[in-house]
Length: 299
Image 1 (cartoon, rainbow, N blue to C red):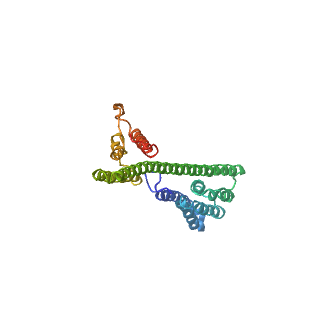
Image 2 (image 1 turned 90 degrees about the vertical axis):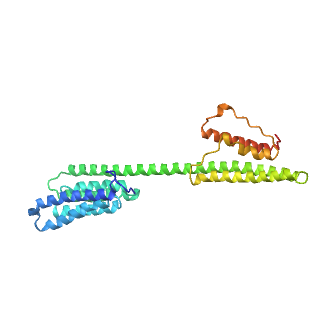
Image 3 (image 1 turned 30 degrees about the vertical axis):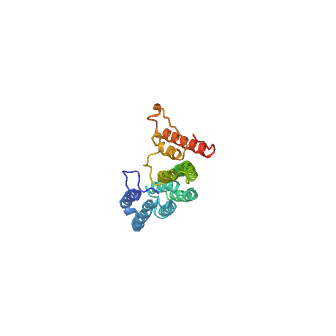
């Protein structure tokens, strides 16, 4: 539920309390002005005004209950004391709130409660024509329909936002999975190639084998750093993506393993957007991995 109303950032409850208080003051003022006519019913009329106006306080949190209380107060007031001049407007706001804030099925109860309320209200109004009752019924149903349609539109928008968030999460997961595949696939293949080359020269050239092991260690450390960067997306989005200037971290392990790799970057590639640089980096990484894994290339 909304924590703040649209009026200057005031809490919604404060706005509803102020609205209920304003209606209550007006309703009591009218009853005080007609106190002589009310006689012994004056206190009851004031008490009913408190009930009817007070129902607006809960119009957002419990719209069905609030409207039911307000309608019962209106019926009792109309049949026992006489129709109030402002009660109908309080009921109108309560009916709109029921359509706007209640769930779909609870909101549908509004028109059912409305009918006996209108019948009771006009029963307390002497000389009113049936056309007036029909007119009020039309406008009250229109207010309920407006609130109901706004609520359903809000539900559709919220469902759309949830769908968009879900798609964004899925797309991010796919991107992270693709990044992990690129990082792990390239690194593991490079380390296997380095370890295999070291094994082949272990007896004939121990110094070269030692260099291969150092290269395996360096490649593993670079892989851990790359994994930290990729997984860091789950925590923050501040780490820079790799680009053309970082190709050495992809090429060096293969060179250390004995593959001849020549990197030639066109000067026109300087200043590309980071997204394009990341794509170029991944393409080179995947190409080298495939050349080594599937083509068993030496250059």
